[in-house]
Length: 359
Ligand code: ATP
Ligand code: MG
Image (cartoon, rainbow, N blue to C red; front, top):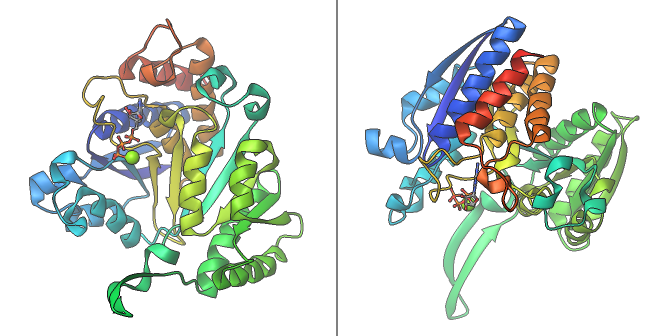
């Protein structure tokens, strides 16, 4: 197959980690006989410096015409003084919106060889394999009105939590589709004891569940879900939830496995390309020093192969290669234990490439 990939390196360690993922994708192309072409476009701080705009129109075009988009990270302290809409982060919100990406997928699985990096007990973590599906374009972050106003002689602030049937339906369907090819269990997280949006959420999720008779559905209140993620994360397969709850729960879940440098994510819409990026940010403290762990971005590229290109074997080869380098004991600084040798970004990347080529 021929696939066009648009790469948005962004800021901080972004350029280093996307370069690593590109190398791995090229190795996948060679090994499995695909032609991947790469086009680079600026976003975030890099784009502000070059074009005085965190999301230039040309970048949006380059993404819309691609088969998949790979992003590093955006954000730079130099722009902290700017209003929100002019900051690097506005580029990320803008591209998600432009591509209509309503579902954010974050897999969390325990790499057995890494368990010392987690603060939780081995018996809790070993074998964790869950996927959080977060609604990304609705809810509290976007609802109107969102404003300051006068109320009873003092200042009041308002955010609005609203969801439409259609918005809930499409994210629920996404979760059930994923569960079908996983362990066939969906946990829908809400706060239906107090929120009207959550009551509609439950109703719609129940309706969608009827289309998937082989998948079991369970509802869980968000406060309980936060607790269960720490107490017994192995009970979860696919967890689906609205924007705000998903934001919080996915960060919580990311700590189960120990390192931010390991976790991939995918954001997908109903048509057009998906956007794939590591969960971590720009890590300004280690940028440009070849210390960044490239595995989160490499695994994100693996998700692109699977979810945007339908390349199941190729995605599996990337996953296996990541597993293999960890088993071999290769460690970047973020996952190295006391006294363990530390590999550079390039060494880690080359090792993954080697394993992909021998698959
Ligand atoms: P941002 O504002 O862009 O989110 P941040 O500093 O708030 O940046 P992260 O970039 O996510 O948050 O980094 C948090 C910590 O984790 C930092 O100390 C960083 O060095 C470390 N870290 C993040 N990603 C990686 C990685 N890929 N490899 C190694 N260390 C990482
Ligand atoms: Mg951060």
